[in-house]
Length: 114
Image 1 (cartoon, rainbow, N blue to C red):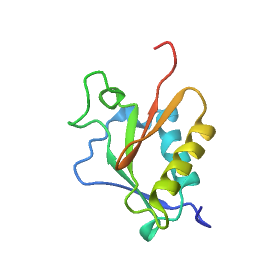
Image 2 (cartoon, rainbow, N blue to C red):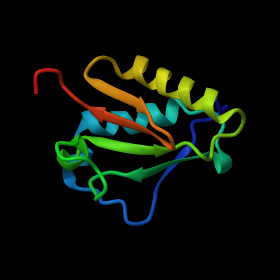
Image 3 (spheres, one colour):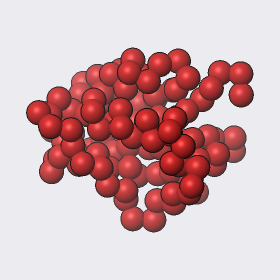
Image 4 (cartoon, rainbow, N blue to C red):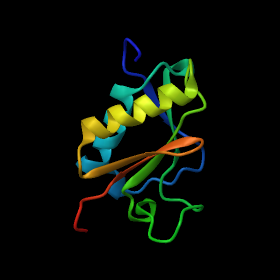
């Protein structure tokens, strides 16, 4: 991990709404920053929120999910990305799902029973 929590940026055209500022949703971003591996320029990039390109029923459309870039990880990307996803899941707990995809980490606030 980095000695100091990295900054966070949103990719151009990522759509953010008021619901993204609910404490449970902001917590996902905070945990992503605090658990991040070494990243180019020390930036956690959010590449998707509530925008097109997601399956029907995705929590992206309920403003409860983000995708995080992994291509800017310094070091062995596959290992670092997997470990980052594991750290996030452990820190967030069972009301959240963290999934490592091919080119990003998907994180969502998914209260079981919703």
